[in-house]
Length: 153
Image 1 (tube, rainbow, N blue to C red):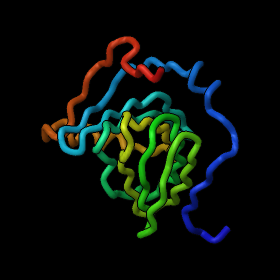
Image 2 (image 1 turned 45 degrees about the vertical axis):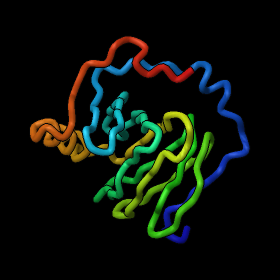
Image 3 (image 1 turned 60 degrees about the vertical axis):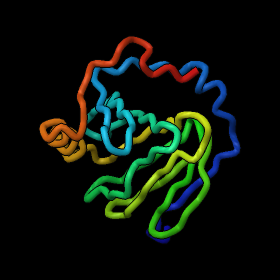
C-alpha cells in the first residue's frame, strides 16, 4: 500500500444490488447550501454506514475526516471526485477508498441524482455531532423520512 487514497472501478454490475436495495432510514439530514440528503442507516462499535443523495448540479464540498477511513460506493448516477488535487469521473460501481485526513469532494455532473453509500471505520461520533451542530445553526434540517423516501428505482 502506498498510503494514498485510491479509486477502484469494479468490473461487476450493481443491477441486482439496486433492484433489491430499499432501506428505510429512521432519520435524515438535508443541507440548505450544497443541497444533499444524508440517510444514516447503521451504527455499530466498528462502522457507520449510510447513503447520500446528491441532486443534479450539487456537491459534497471538500472535507476530510480526522480519524476515520471512508469507503464510498456509487450506486446510481455519475459525477466527479476530487481527491488530493486529482479529478476522476465516477459512476455506478465506482469505489473510493479515502484514508484519514485526505481531502475529498464529490460533484454530481450527471443528469440524475447521484446516490452513494458511505462507510466509516472506526465510527466515532464526530460525524453525527457535526450534523447535529449544523442542525442547531440552521444550516441542516433534520427530519424523519417518509416510507420509500429513498426511491432508488
